[in-house]
Length: 233
Image (cartoon, rainbow, N blue to C red; front, side):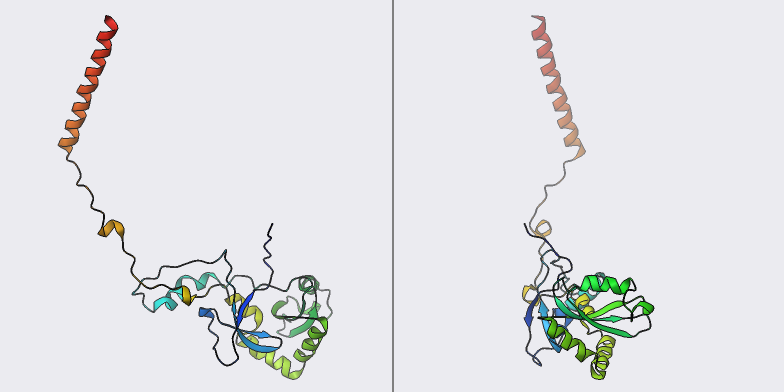
């Protein structure tokens, strides 16, 4: 029996070669940080959320305008998948005073709960906190190394810049709710079978309908007379 994990991180379907492809969230290409380096990736779509839209051929602004108007306004609230228990990760929290807390853990949900409950010295007086970035790494040693790098002056400056531009993982993952799958796009006309091929029969007149009703009444009376006469013999 399969089980769905809503907190599982998104599955990366493709990592594009650096400098070859520009990030374009509307077409499923997202700028994220992998192993401490900026990268452009494509995610596997969720089969339970996959859908199709019929866009008018003469839509003002084309498919892009339609998706921005009719689809994207309903996707920003999709939760960003978070690291699962047992995954080593480095994470960044934005505190109420706009400072950033950087840490590492192998149980993100439990550690975040400790922060939210005021059990961590640094973030306790600075509640509430918001997770704005995380990176999953292969080992605790790599997580500690990445944590140290982010705590340097350059690392903190990079975090602030990426946060201001909406490129940190949490923001990028929240944008991954909907995109256009261009290789599945089909362009053409939808032909209405009823309008172009079906030839409806003309409606009958009231006189014709009335004549049929009278004929049925006479036929019914004849049947009843036959039954009654048969009962008298």
